[in-house]
Image (tube, rainbow, N blue to C red; front, side, top):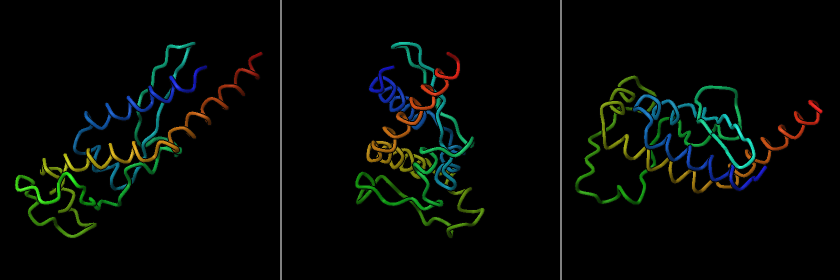
Length: 142
């Protein structure tokens, strides 16, 4: 098993999930975290599917901000990025605001993408753990 191929596949799967996640999925990740991954590898063929809300893993806290959306460089000073005034943290109105704000959703996607890039070590550890479990499972099957 090539760990680098698995790591690259995991990274691409996370990037794809971030691009394609619904507003509700983004909100849930920012509120609670909960990302995970299912990995299937046979030789150099690797398939990774990103999951949400499953068992806790090393990926579970990626993107979790408890609903806060830290301002990133791309949104600072941008005349086009009109946030309006978000409702108070923790209120139902804040969730509704997020779900209806394309700017907030774009920002959430950008924040998640940056986290995936910054937390490369977490992805490496996830792959190492997955490989270790697979090695143990193969030892049991032998």
